[in-house]
Image (cartoon, rainbow, N blue to C red; front, top):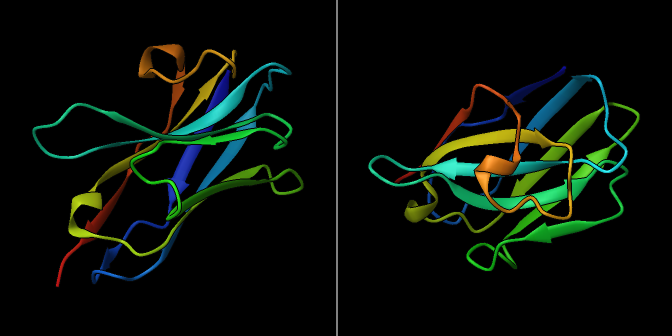
Length: 124
């Protein structure tokens, strides 16, 4: 079993930066990884970024590329999502999730373990 807990969500103004954290505990999968998803009201859950278990491979969705960065601190068992130049359209609940198969993990269905989510609101 893998347990994930997000934190760092907040209300910020457009143009601000925010860093989300996802603390991992429990079992680890050598071929697995952690992804970030977001879901805005009335919209489907959207893939944002992912990182493999060792932190050596990452992928960021085109919709946020250049503004969002994913990283991992293996000592703290924590995955981060650095979000810069935030815009109102980034407003959503952000979830981190664990998958056993990093390579084929762009859809939410590939993830078996989910955190409870953290709210990010971008508004002036």
